[in-house]
Length: 612
Image (cartoon, rainbow, N blue to C red; front, side, top):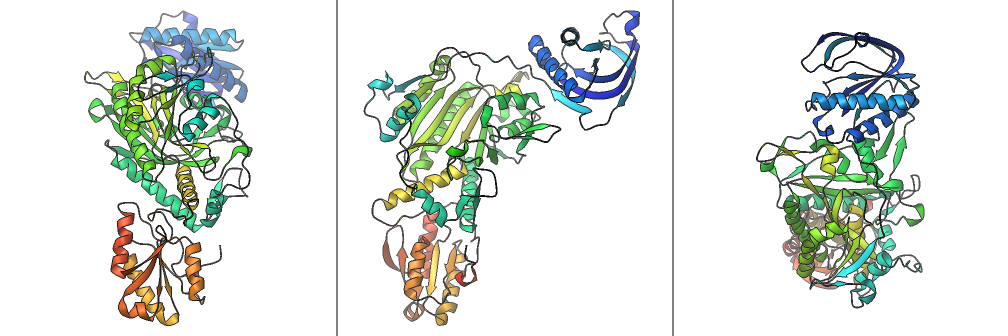
C-alpha cells in the first residue's frame, strides 16, 4: 500500500461520474468537506491482497501517529490509484479502505471516506509546514511473535554426528573458546596490560578520534593508505567471484518513515545509531542492505540475469557500548565491503554460498591463519533443511562446526548465518568473515524477478563480507604480525599493504642523486619507495628503516653506486641479500602479485615529512 499524506486547512471533493468498478453510494456521499484535516490518498497494491488485516493495521497506526504529530483534528481517506502501477482488485481495495475507516473511527478520530471508483473533483488547501506532505509505503509486517524455548548449541562433527557441548573436549583452541563464550556464557578473564596490536596501530597511525563520539577512528597517512588498499582489495575479490557484480554507491541515512526500513531496523534494536532532526527520525545504516535493496526494488530483473551481485564498501554504524569498543575490531563507525548475491531460489543460494565460503577460507589462509565456524540457524526447521550444506563444508575444511539454534517462534528474515572466527594473540575468538542466506528482505523491500512464465517471484539473497569489515581485516593483519614477533623474529606485513615497500638510504648528499634515480626506476614498476635524505648517520637511517617496518631497505654508497649491486635487508626473512636494482624490483613485484597498488600518501623524501 502506498499513501500520500496532506495536512490541510481544508479538503473538499465532489463525485462526477462512476467507473465500471464504482461502489454504490448514498446521495449524501457524493460530496464532502473537512477542515483541519489529514488527507490520506491511498493506493492499494496487489501484494496487499493476502494481508488485509496487517496492512490496514500498519497504515492506521501510522496515520494515528501522524495525526498526533501534526495536530490534525480529523482524517479523510481518499482512494487514489495513481501512486502505483500494481493495483489490487477493486473488491480488495474497497475492503481495505472500509476496514481502515472503521479502525480509525474506533480509535476515536473523526473520519470520512471519499467514494471508491468515482471520477471526482477536489479542492485542497495544504498548510505548507515541513510535515504537511508525507509519503508512506506499507508492507503489512506481521506482528512480532514471542519466542518459544531457549537457544540451543551443539557440535556438528565431520562425520555428521551431533555432539553435546559438555561431551566435546578435543576442539581447537578457537573452537573451545567459542564454546565457552557463546554456548556456556563464560566471560573472558580481563586482559592484563595493553594488547600488543595497539602498539602497531600507533606505529601505522591508526587511532581513536577524541573529538568525535566514542568508537570513531582516524588514520594518519600510513593507516589511511593501508585502509584504502584493503578497500581496493575487497573490491577486487568480489569481481573475482563467479557472478556479475554491480558496483553501487549510496547514502548512509534512511528514514524510519519507510516501513521496510523501520521493520528492518527493529531487528537490530539498541545497536542502531539514530538521528532525530526534530522533524523526522533517521537511522544510520547497519550495512549496505538498505541502500542496495532500495535500488534493487526498482530494477527490472529476469531469471536469465540471476544470479548477480551488488557491492559497496559501505560506511556503517553500530552503537556499540562505550566500554566494549576496540580499535580496529569493535567500532561505532565501520566500513563493510558488503556483497549481496541475488539468487532465484534457495538451491541456487546454497550453491553460491559454498563458493563464497571457499573464498572466505582462502583469504584467511593466505594470511597464515585459520577459521572455525559458528553456524547460526533461525530455527530447527532451517537446520533440517540446510544440515547437508553445513556438513559438506565441515568435511571440506576438515573441522567441526559450533551449531546454534535461535529460539523457535520468531520469523527471522534469514535461515543460515556463518560467523568465521580466528583465535587472536589475546586468546580471544574474533569473528571476521561472514555469509548468510536471506529469505525475507526481498519481500520486505519489494524486490522481484520475472521467472520463466513471466510471473513475479521473490529472490533469495546472500549477504557476505568475505574479508570482514575493512577494520577487522586490518586487525587480522596486525594481530598476525604480533604472532610473528612472538616467534622471536621481526614482525612484518604483506608487502602489498606495507606503506613503505622499499627504503633507500644514501650514505651522504653525494649519493642522493643516485638514490633518487633508483627510487624513480622502482616507482615506475609500481612500487612504493621512500628515500632517507636526512642528515642522520647511516646507522641511524638503518635503525629507522627497521623501526618503520620497511619491507626492503638498502644503503647507497660509493660501492653500490659504482657496482649497481645492493645489500638489501629483507624484513620478512630477517636477512641481507645482494641484488641489483632490477632484481630488487622483480622481487618486490613478485611479492605484490596482482594485489592493489597505490602511491605513498606522504612525501617520499623523509626530509620533507612533518613529524606526525
